[in-house]
Image 1 (tube, rainbow, N blue to C red):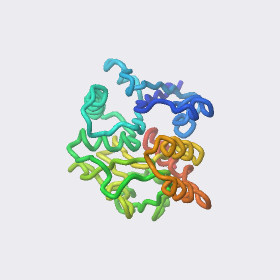
Image 2: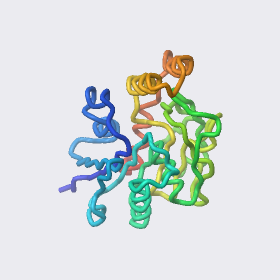
Image 3: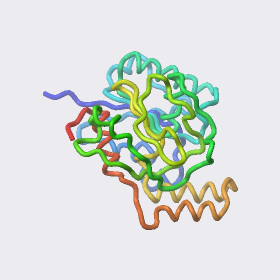
Image 4: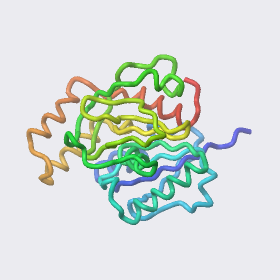
Length: 248
């Protein structure tokens, strides 16, 4: 009998009203992208100080660190505790997938530099360039590695300098580090493979209502998704292949 695969999601952001009403929360948004029938997906809202017991970490096959409205370079208690847990998981050689804030925090833990995005925030559909010679040996992408991939972007911080032990997998015209890996157990993505158009539009509307962006910025952001969409199926394949070692 095949053992049930178990995964743990570190939720570094509170659920928006839209996410709760439409999907039942971000836990379900991630599971709809990454989960398969028969698996167990647990989540801990680390932003609220909820963490698993260290003795329970070994029972999980893989871990995901979500995005966050918090900065990855600050020293709040929960962020420092999550940093310690990332170090522990790496020592255990566990698979860890870092998304946006997770991507930045893992870079910080491994000696890279993170900070405010030098060319400003992104709230849009972005296009990133794949470093083909770097991803080929990993085989997360499958047999055919595309030159570019579209992904929804929602961030105001970035990885300014990669960890010395990291390998660059993708970059864009605005950001030098869009995706990287460390050894064979860490994969990090600046964009949001789990987001769709509706989630991004809700975020844009909320940020606009809060006075953090201007109307023209909001309209320009939404316009990137008028005639295009993210390569969500391909991102799903990459993330699942990495977490589960599935054949492509």
